Image (cartoon, rainbow, N blue to C red; front, side, top):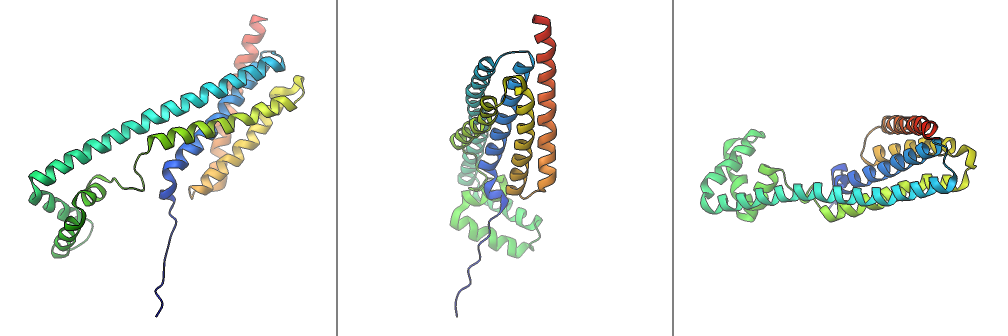
Length: 233
């Protein structure tokens, strides 16, 4: 009789890189497009707009990488501190830790006898791993990875930021802001839909919320550019 294999791909398995990728690409597209629209609305020529956009790409990618690395590293530090404390408690008070694990399984619906058996077997196999997973909520699936998050954020930010720069190169100088805004709205809708789909959420809702905030950001920077461009001019 053949043994049936069953494999599933859950959305939580993607949460580490998906969060950083969606956030990076969205920020790259929105912030660079907003910067370009604002500078163009101030009356600057295409070379000035391109320089501003390129500077925004480099600065934004580095900022995203640094911010993501620091943020996720803080999470890693907290996880390591919790694991170190759990290791000490397992060495000093193993009976209390076993009882704690048993209560966790009882609270989840197992009867006392079965919970004790499960706790004993899991403790014998991997005591720290069992407490990390069931008491602390730390597992390989959702563990923090600072370098991965930083690299993904920087790369996806740069990829998102390249789009409005390409549009600037191709658009007529008198209509840069209009072309960048229109292409960015389309790009945000696609990005929001893809991100929602990859995360298992509704595509239309994901596209709508990303597009809305992107449009507001570009409108705000266009207003600033127009007001201060006229004032300075």
